[in-house]
Length: 328
Image (cartoon, rainbow, N blue to C red; front, side):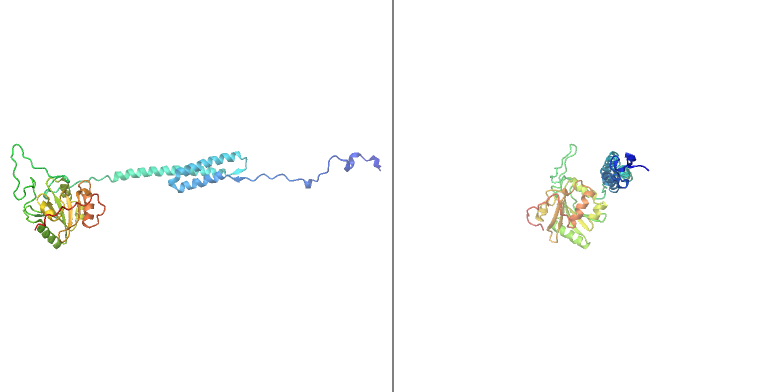
């Protein structure tokens, strides 16, 4: 049996170095910081998806998706595991690239289709039909006086007819003549007519009997715009525009005084006039309302004019002349 003096110093637990530690009370190791999804990766995926839906904005949204995707990948690599979303970034980059390809493919397809359509439907050429059977109207530029007839050196000039001293070498016919141009009736008032007012009343009566409306056109010798109107009359566009219209053409040189009495302007040709039952002008336009004297230009204007719906005009209606007394 050992005495108390025989106990080794290290056997006394109170004399051991340092405090005693309970292994069950040791502090747990710190938990690793949880990772979060990169906002740039999410933005890249959203921009790439929108780029495929909104094709018109595909170049812009696709570029944003690619830029955000590469930025997100670089941030994830630097985060040492604190950021996630590399797959989202890769998806955004892929969608942005795909949107670029789809956009330019659609542009190429549209250009190819447009070129094919132009090849299938060439631009039509407009041809103005000639009117061999229609008396040639009298040609002069708009608002310019007719040139005086000239005599050649080998042939003396012929004097103008006594009943139409100012008619020129291409005078209006002596007697009124009616010509059918398709479904349209065209009347040229003869130079031997004593009263234009009486002739217009007769033409108004004939028009009413056939369910037509009277339209007066003023003409003059060497009137190229008048010739353009005459050449366009057989065209289906003008046939429809002047449906149920009786077109009466009056030479302003032969009937200048009569036109003054009826207050029908005649300082420029061609002019177009709508008359009421008392031969009063209700509306008037000139050939200045269209460009070239072809059917595609003339028909829309005259169609609206004869139906009373022509409101937007290039020129003011021709001013009526001062009356010199109504011819009877």
